[in-house]
Amino acid sequence: MQPVLPIVQLRDATLDDAPFIARVVLAGIDLLDIDAVLHDEQRAIYEHLVDICRMDDTLYSYCNTRIAEIDGNSVGALVAYDGARYARMREKTFGLVQQTSGMDLSHNAMETGPGEFYLDSMAVLSDYRGVGIGKLLMRDRMEFALKNGFQKVTLLVDKDKPRLQEYYQSEGFSFSKEMFVFGAWYNKLEKF
Image 1 (cartoon, rainbow, N blue to C red):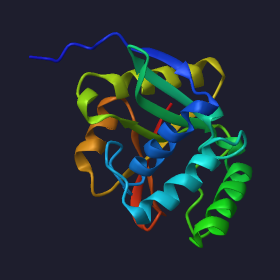
Image 2 (cartoon, one colour; image 1 turned 135 degrees about the horizontal axis):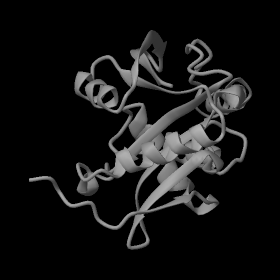
Image 3 (cartoon, rainbow, N blue to C red; image 1 turned 90 degrees about the vertical axis):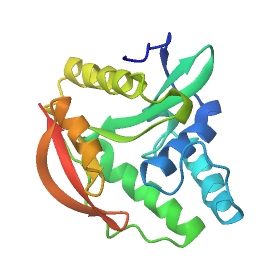
Image 4 (tube, rainbow, N blue to C red; image 1 turned 180 degrees about the vertical axis):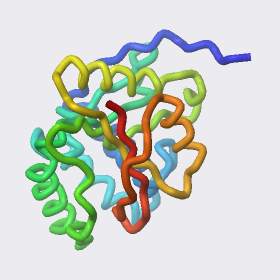
């Protein structure tokens, strides 16, 4: 039996959502589960990422994020943006990451570019998975991309997650190419 989708409200993120967005981003690159308790070594990275999420011109900005809420509580989020802005936002974001953590991300492949609307990071709290919240967030951003004239919607999926790739393919995405980012191989998928 299919779980019943609770009443979900989608809204643009605000500055106050930065701590939640930081968890979404860290979950998106498999550094922690969105629900996880932070360990001391993770806390510093998380706190720096919260600062980055509070800026309006970074990859993981609250300005690039949609929040899914149930009863006024954030239960999921999707960070997505115009690929034409990627190179500029990446330079600033990765520069800040390197300044604060020493992590050099400059060797990452260019994930997106002009003409693409890029779905960067998405996560849903574990208690709310399997009821369609991720699908709702994705469809919301795909509708936005269509209305705003983007040629395609793109995303990356970890090659070690074939079930996730199958899910995206069931949503109409197809394989584009392989990319090496954040120390792992990903498949870039696209939908026109």
